[in-house]
Length: 126
Length: 107
Image (cartoon, rainbow over all chains, first blue to last red; front, side):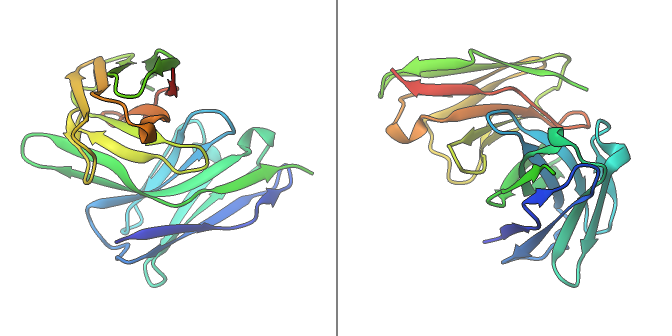
């Protein structure tokens, strides 16, 4: 059973860069069916997709964050990472890494986040 | 981006009763819609993908329907462990977007 674990600082100063890493265990990050994704959820609010990366390194970023987001993958360590620059208080949230399966079965497109990390709270404050 | 709107925001239901949750997309997403359940302090859990296919291990009391812009999640007989927040999410267009959630609470 694949498991994900986020790691990184819980406190980041305004204007600095938030950096998180997600470690994948129990399976390979090279699984071609999966995107490896980052999402976030401010306290008491809904979910926002930040972006996703394939093991090949190809990425999709949310246009609302694209200018500040960089994702990378390290297949040798079975990890993927998020960097979000120029953070403000609006970036305070629980950050989740997740595995998103995505495939076409000949009739339908099937997609969903079926593997989740436990989430890590990141606060932006001086 | 596609805006997902869920209703109602809160649904009060007695255990054993049926719950019907709605999700509307600002433009057609075909059948490319998921439903998630989230409990306090936990990550979301995938319930339904492709609008109507239950994810692995999801009980049969959860069912999804709809296509285009209108979708429904039905919980046929609410159990105590079903009281939670439910989110819909479209994957037809990037960026993936979520609805604001429906909180199912005990009546």
